Image (spheres, rainbow, N blue to C red):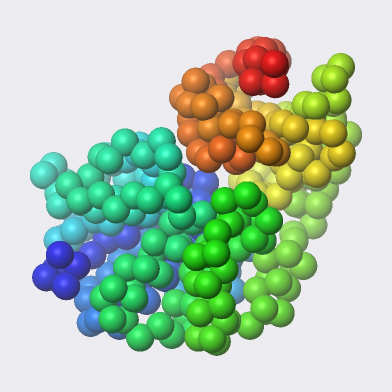
Length: 311
């Protein structure tokens, strides 16, 4: 089907992460190598963390009535993850493709390629490009490798598979430089992100069992850190890194009546189901949701539900 089409629009989810960005750029360069017309759009700004990736400047806001033969959603568990601004401009009856790895994916597109055994959507992009006999370039390899690294927790999460490692090895053969990836992803944090981590750690709390830890970030604290609009992917992992903690949670106030809630877990504890109950989704050990209510209200609601998971 991809071979038969000529004009593609690639779209990722709101508050894009490494897998989203890596998947978009990997697919972009792959389709360009097949001499296709390709555009990429995101509702939200690309995090500065990924500015080192080739082609990042091709990601642009969607133009009204932009002509395209097919829209490919990448790393979106449902179409609403692409954002209201994008959906408002989506042409009715548009041919759509859904490429994703989230268990909660609702198969919303005309064509769906969803595999929740893959640790990252970027894995699926790699498999698609190989099936299309695309010659993998360094640009593609770096983007795909970035997606896999970020969604696998640098290959530390339980669902990192032998297939994941084989793909990573292939990407190294295609020219990925470990030092370049490491330096840009893990050793080039903006000062505001580190200050935001400090604010979060000041608010670190535990339940009486020591099995659950959580951090909160109010709008004021985000502003104090100079981190408005910055959504670091690693802060929440500090909760899970603590000995004895089985569930880690980050509450981030995004408006006076909306809170972004992130979950991390260890072992067999499933936080994806917890996120789904709150209108979100994700994976067994990493999930999240946007919950309406004040920071205190959402915190109390979520902690009650999380306690049930522990019990």
